[in-house]
Length: 216
Image 1 (cartoon, one colour):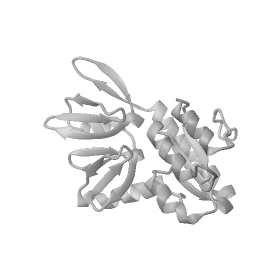
Image 2 (spheres, rainbow, N blue to C red):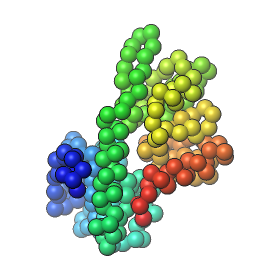
Image 3 (cartoon, rainbow, N blue to C red):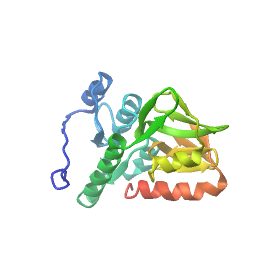
């Protein structure tokens, strides 16, 4: 699949989830992880908890015969959930979509500039952007905040990415970091909750469905 799409990658095979979990805890980095759910000693749900702790930006594809885990997979922010019998049909699309996200994460950035600095912010590192008076506050995955003296509308234009959407008039959120939407609250993959306006909820759900298409 990677060759046919002219993508380069290093592929590592693990015979046990415990070995993968240990390597992740020791600092090994992975962009994309494909795993079963029913496994001895440490199942896929337990493994994903480790992944979320040490590699919050990694994409997870669950491949399993057990549909009962689909909801739990969404709660753990799985990128895709594929039934084994549907593997030939759905895996190529999932891999292609995963690399689209990975390219967005590594290639696209926001040019942040003010009187003190010029800096490129990778789009993947932006959780959301909030309004504070005439300033925009960038909330990043490393738990830091950066202020730019610019309103949200020009910031949105300069982001130039369909993965960023207004949650309400005072917040722009990065769709790839959304775990769930409950009523008018958005949960992010850092366990933070953001408010969303009733007028934006329907659009947000439709955009997430498009992003997560073929997940079930």
